[in-house]
Image (cartoon, rainbow over all chains, first blue to last red):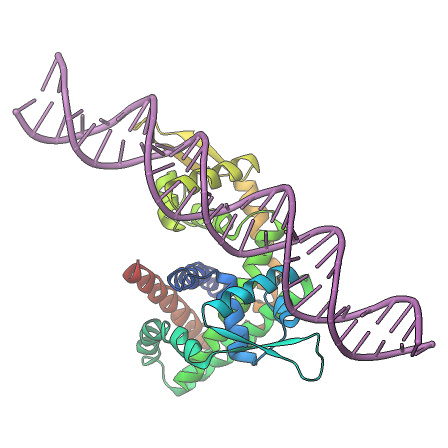
Length: 144
Length: 144
DNA sequence: CTAGATTACTGCGTAACGCAGCGACTGTGT
DNA sequence: ACACAGTCGCTGCGTTACGCAGTAATCTAG
């Protein structure tokens, strides 16, 4: 049973990644760019260096990625008043909402599935999904 | 509650994709290449054209991707006896096992989590994960 | 005040990709 | 039997994202 769950996870990974790649292509950006938007949307504004670490890019590549995002109107460059070397990248809220909206259709499908689970069962799902995300993050940190 | 589950899914996606990208880098290949290996490992041998569709690549790019995989020893090119235009790409089983082994560490973490769920709860997880994978595949097909 | 660390950014080479076009082959219709 | 349209994998070619190395500006510690 446990192995079956692990296999289900592995099987799910493929379409998830493909779907995200698809959205990135639709938006005319790299998956890396989309990833950076996630980081900004979920964790708030960040410096280019911080962003580079989060999306696993070198400083230079991050700089160019930010340039792409700025030109496309997804983020803004704001000078950091405390450290004049730094720049704070903050996401454009409208753009972020627009990007998030691309997941509406898929979320509706998931919502329909979730409707077949009662409260206790959804609690089980939530507990596992949260744990799984943390484990994956741990694994990434360990291998970094 | 349902919304929380959806958020947990969204949150999980990020590290999952990053982790896979990490493995691809470790293996000295593109994420696309790794994706092709998955397809071959899960669905068996396929032609370059079929592979190109599955990983969302053009015919030409797939041809070069296959060339990379062949040179790295992950797959073999086998001429199709029924149609001499075609070539069947079949994965090298040892290489596939070696790549699969890279997930062992993460799977162990998941296994530890799953140990805290009883049979009935794991059945719930399995049911949802399977459904989620199918929904995501549906969404991809619809937007293709 | 100065020396070293840190930050974002800029050439430059590499490589993966899409597009367009190629020869080889299939199969269908006449 | 044969021509011709369709399909297959593959190959130039231009574009672009990336890593690496180096730079100027700025901060910080002694």
